[in-house]
Length: 204
Ligand code: TYD
Image (cartoon, rainbow, N blue to C red):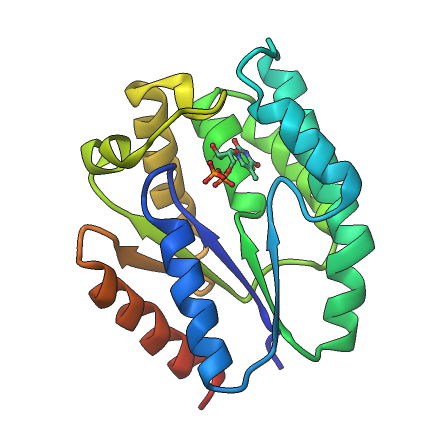
């Protein structure tokens, strides 16, 4: 049986938060229970690490940044995700997960992909989503949507283009897990696409 762990991914400004909110409303309407987590975050320690990572006044080297994201994930997996997945009661919805580190730190920053993969494997163990919704839209659209930028979002268009390309390559490598959603479409069209794929994958 597939697990009930679903992640949402995409570059900043792609509309991920809006779509997660809409998806959770649909789960509610259908009496399906869920737990929502965001990465980095979800535990007291990981939320502290999130603040460090997103604070514009911090200067952080690429490898330090990578290790901090992985540390935050390790804490979330051990304290929250593993116990919940073992119970297998509610859906676990994660706003970003392991693919963000590969897309942002490997494809975006240039940290060695194998290095991240091997630490990630140790960190996540068996905790891998059964579905990853990748929201993908034109990079200019996502940049336009960004308001006040945090440290990660301030990295610029070239960086975000590399991240977008990284996500699409990762999707090709894990075709069964990834569902690519055309996020150039309207909010309600995207919502319907996501719900349609969810129904096909989990409710049939
Ligand atoms: P997110 O919560 O999507 O940002 P926001 O709250 O502004 O919508 O993600 C935080 C930022 O961290 C985002 O720019 C992506 C980045 N990130 C990485 O670079 N690597 C990672 O492993 C993760 C989980 C996030």
